[in-house]
Image (cartoon, rainbow, N blue to C red; front, side, top):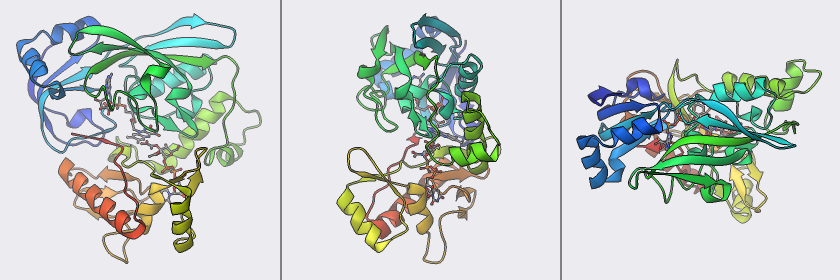
Length: 350
Ligand code: FAD
Ligand code: EPU
């Protein structure tokens, strides 16, 4: 465990942006984290301004638009253990530095259900509640039990239960009122012994049919999700990206009806609240740098909009973070102009 200076973060973010961190250190236990915060440089920074500490997991939801003038703490806390069991559930605690997809596979291999729809999401366990990650009709909040986090300022451990986290669509207290205050060190999930299959979302059912699945299982659903995701989302190991760059915007039903009159093909999903969630990918695909070109598949230098999923911005190699950001600004402006809808970024911008 040592503090390094001026290191490149290129290998630590899936966009592959070559930004530098003033300081960088990895830790693999709460004790090591505590020791790191004793270093003079780190302590001075932390006391001056909490935002100069950045906790990093897999770096799969970050865009560095500039060098980071502070310390990056790479969370490597490992370990998976069963902590509790009742008639219907098994409670599994995982270290924040465990790879998310490997954790999903661990659950599936142990016949623990509820997490299978979240297969193949990049990143680590620690960011999963921070982001309330979601896919194919399931969000972390559906299987979350509790988490432990280290308060950077008060230097003490705090336990958060479901109600403490205030989970929303890609939101939690850790992105809002407690932003930059806690390092999540472990998360406990409540998995089902008996599966309740959730195949209603997106193309899961068609994919299961294509795969020739006779008997539904959590493994089959996981495989179907993996196939679908691999067919449209770019692999960060090949093309830099951070998944959906923007959130799907929510509008009220009246506004949706007005838009639908003007754009009959608009894609929207009715929410239980009565509001409608628009497919941002569709909105972006309908706009472009000019009337004859769509953003989808657009490329300017090494910054681009993915050809199979317009919601994903990509780095073809040497794009700088501010070039990707500038492209996102252009996209937001064009969607606002055409649809009067403001897109919000999902990716964390530094
Ligand atoms: P990082 O990018 O390292 O960090 C993200 C944020 O969390 C930062 O603000 C960071 O400071 C904070 N953070 C990280 N770890 C901790 C910790 N231990 N304590 C406190 N704060 C912490 N997301 C979805 O929800 N659904 C998807 O379907 C999905 N698909 C994706 C597909 C691709 C190809 C890619 C590249 C990304 C996708 N994402 C998706 C986004 C991303 O995978 C998730 O947001 C993931 O949870 C980020 O994890 P990470 O460990 O990489 O976090
Ligand atoms: N669409 C288009 N053109 C595009 C992309 C999408 O028209 O280029 C339309 C299509 O009608 C499509 C619909 O949008 O049916 C929805 O697309 P998709 O199923 O690919 O899902 P998404 O809404 O674009 C969301 C999440 C993903 C998650 C998938 C599956 C957000 C911001 N994104 O994407 O999460 O994996 O659903 O549940 O909510 C992420 O957060 O990084 C992420 C990848």
